[in-house]
Amino acid sequence: MLIDTHCHINMLDYDALNSSMDEVIQDAIDHDIERMICISVDFASLPDVLAIADKYDSVYATVGVHPSESGSEKLTVERLVSFAQHPKVVAFGETGLDYHYNSSGLEHMKDQFAIHIQAAHEAKKPIVVHTRAAQEDTIDIMRTMRAGDVGGVMHCFTESKEMAKSALDMGFYISISGIVTFKNAQNVKDIASYVPLDRLLIETDAPYLTPVPYRGKPNKPSFVRFVADMVADLRCIPVSEVRRVTTENAYRLFPGLSVES
Image (cartoon, rainbow, N blue to C red; front, side, top):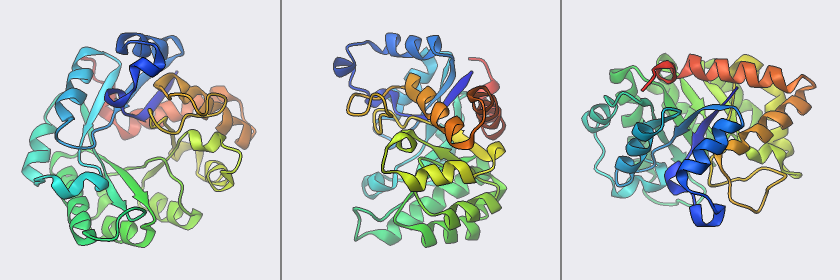
């Protein structure tokens, strides 16, 4: 079995996929994808995310505001915790810091990240961290807010080995996306080999980052199997081992995945 720990089912282009949502979910199930976590990026689309989780037994959800969306959101700990009472919400996020396209409003972004971590403490659920070009500040906030006490995952990790070690030292998991299959992604390949297997997760981040051999085409949850294949190749272990351990890791980090709807 496999778990796609990070996808955006509500954002998929079903016309481009030439499939309905029902068919995409069934395609994932047919390829042994046991669970899919549909990740929230803002409050406007959250009702759609939760409705998808309600409709499909294999789909779960998070609640949160992406750092690139944080400027327009009225975010409070109370609001996040309230939404997290939904029975299929397993985590907060994605949240974090993204300085790649942002040169202003950084303090607000940091505040929003801290609010998510505080909500995670109150609701006792892990966090899904997005970080890009903000390594030092991301780790500093995680340490200051004792993010290690709630745990979480550094999703679609593309940063340095030093940052990975800092996150691992706080008890976090590292998630590898389809980028690991790209020819020029040596850093991500190195991280996929470096992270202890019992702290590794895999994801698609669909509709983004479609893995080889379908790069250039729309991504979907069933393609997480190609991430598992590449991780197995890089670590010189059977893909069955990658599938087994990353699935166990996902259930350990997100206990809510074990709850049937």
